Image (tube, rainbow, N blue to C red; front, side, top):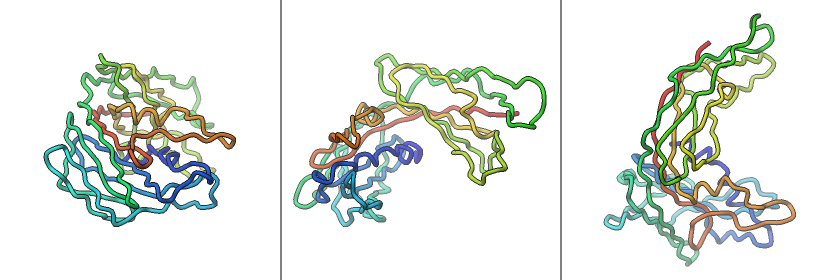
Length: 263
């Protein structure tokens, strides 16, 4: 759950606009309605692209509500810019509506939570990956076949594959004594509308069990991975689906398979 919200990641781009058009009175929303979980809504001020500021300012003390059309859930301001209600458990197939008022302007959005992916399988439950670092041993390095992932996608929906190590203290595959920085424990592919992806064995950084998570996405999420044309010479409005503000409020569902990486 945290992977898709935190590694998604690039939503910081929703704050990046030119100084001449930046407006601290405009709210930026990051909201993920993940099936089977309690949502967290993050609300901050817009940050200018060329600004010397490095900290995004949270917006607190708002009256934020989410409704499924029948029950209205009032979200509490649990920490800086963070709004939650533990009684709200997101359900697949439901439509949710977000609403609050910021600086006398209504900000709202809606999203449908997609159905859980179906037919999600992996061609292997384990994969052998050798340590290719110098001095790790002689012989020809083991070059295992990629793990093929498949799922049902008759309607060409968007899907995202995220892989994370599930061990409490995982052993690195490539143990580099020259640095104390450990590689990331998770990696992801870009959203796809196909029903097949392959996991390159060389993408794994650790041995042990890995969660391979298939997320079913809505189009508004997938567009965040696309090039919106922003550069130092030209700035355009970042993608999103928030009326009266910036950012995203989107539904997500997922399924998981496990893959073990060993020597």
